Length: 345
Length: 258
Image (tube, rainbow over all chains, first blue to last red; front, top):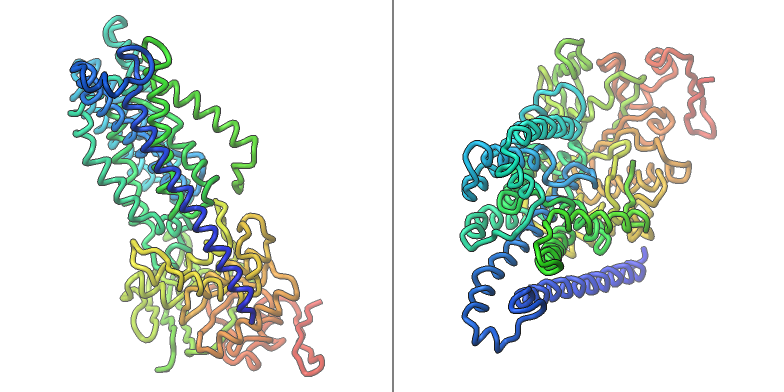
């Protein structure tokens, strides 16, 4: 009837796509620029940016930049991206903007695993990392199994309930371990791990988590449009030719793998997975074709920023988890007060 | 019998094995290209029947066939291209635009990792034009009225280009003018060969648009056949247990129940 109207409508869409592409380009530039600046930023030789000449002359500076800062920065990016992408995927699959990928027993499981290792197996970094990752995944597995046994409510409600129950079990266990821990040696180590941080990042640690991080993120990225369909309720997703239960499970695993990998090296870092998807939706609407890559980029930027603050603000390190919580909660409040959180129910 | 698109043969189904079944030995045959309306009191099993036809619910016993083949023999994708559902309402957790939401109807035509193309966007936009809300394409699905939202769900199903369209109480949120529009959409879909099966609480709507009526009562088909023959005052009175009269006003049948 109205091809002229159609035309203007489609033109409007094209202009919007064009402007969104620019936002993406800016996000990429932001990430890359911040990465380069942060590589040069630090407290050696004095607080501020290291100069290019210095880098050329000073062997120690070079070592510091390439063997300490570079793996640390890359880990910060991996951390931010994994938590943000995972958070978005969880929010979509659960139809709930207030969940993140540490949900479903993953975070509490990992914390318990780390503390268990510190108390009984000693503080070897590799062991702590392995134990945290294993218990994080165990948390997910237990939540899933429990959800299958609950006999009422929809699938999402059952997963949420069992996630709460399993998390509570692990955090009770964590309490016991803290009580048992040697207050001089082990307790500080547990506390340090629970506060999160990247100060002990090495190339080795980074490489150990890369397979899980990259495979998980690539998988999620490939599913970025499909995620919209899986966010619909079961029957509707089914009527669109999806196999909602199987596909959602796959995506949950793909979201949890990188999450538990980064938790295992960085400890508990909260709020990133909750906040970045909200900002992404603010910028791009709800279509996950855009919000998923946007969440990853924003997460990378936020990860670097928080880590920069954590290592330069004071002479001693500020635990990363404290900074992300502080900034995250502040952003959350701003988003809530402005009109960012339009959600049903 | 050969031209039947959808058929139920002795279908038994219940939600809970311990309780009694919701559908009990239900037989049904739907001719390709017809509009069929399921009428019946609350709890008769109308919506259950729709979800069985969709393949979402699996019968305890009996066979459901689509084009003569058991419905579970189709792949998920193929079935998504064949059958679309317009649910009565839907919880939408995020702020999609109307067009983005309608675009989801293209999912069964895309590979699992595919993205909708501009052609898909065009189809989605055309679907919005058909239901008459193309002007809202850019609005948030959370910011429009309940009736408009039901039309969005309808547009999404149209974008799915199904052979069989299932509608669950399609007029429950619609005002008179939108009801009228829906009736017209159904007729124009029928002209293009789409088969339509809908549940409704409005005998008027059934009489206005449907060729076939299926009167259900307590999990069984009480009587089915051409709407004019089946939807009589006598039959409707029986299934609803209220005195229903059919009157003719200017050549059109009207239902009176008070």
